[in-house]
Length: 352
Image 1 (cartoon, rainbow, N blue to C red):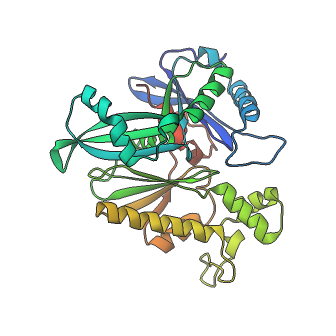
Image 2: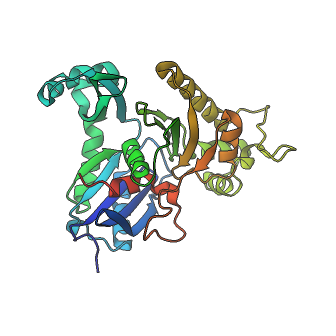
Image 3: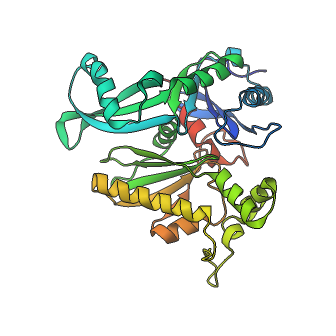
């Protein structure tokens, strides 16, 4: 039997540059149940290049994953996929209240002020988030943008795989949806998400009384493996294995107290990553006047790196947890690395 044909099923599809993840959800009386979850690494004759979109390898991997999961793309009625990376932008703004028609006509002008745009190659969309709690006369608007090239590449991959393209979301929004639909935000304080992918890390802040903040940190799991390979004169494959097994200790060893100890004689990408997180935290506090972070949630494929939660907790004096969106969901496959499905779950739980 091939899944994908029933009207209460939604397929969430996360097509990354390193791997493809998919989650098929079924809803009964608004209670979601996972039918299938799968992941497959994109492999090719050349090594992984985070800035390169590998069309042929991606298309082949997607077809193989769908065959493995026994999903017929042509029978999928509800497909939700996502775009991410440096070719996307997202920012929440506050605007004077206006009608949908007035908002649509002023969207380009507003987007130019807040998003890095090239008018000739940009697709813009927005979503109203309701009344601004600090000023009832204003509205919260979420602006999103991507390039026509990126959207066209994504759409072509879906069509060539036999899918009928459906809703296309942004990865940070999908992550927030996966959390909001399975968890409750704390009444007070802010939640910081660090989603560690292969080519970058998504820095997302949210809270009941705060605006959504998003920034892409250009350091991901690939850069850590590449740095480790350079430091220790080993192959990239060996560095990846060592990073996954030893984690932070593979870069720096351990101090006398058992905590990861940063080497002073040689700067590493981990230190660059910590500096980027620190700078972004300071920027957020300066821009919003808020710094009451309650916790940090690590997710994404790199979240399981041993020692990383402890290192972040020590450096930023905040509680750090690994967040698994599959935990507690009915039908979640045993043994699945839940954090890497954070985007997929949010996509699969969205129908509108």
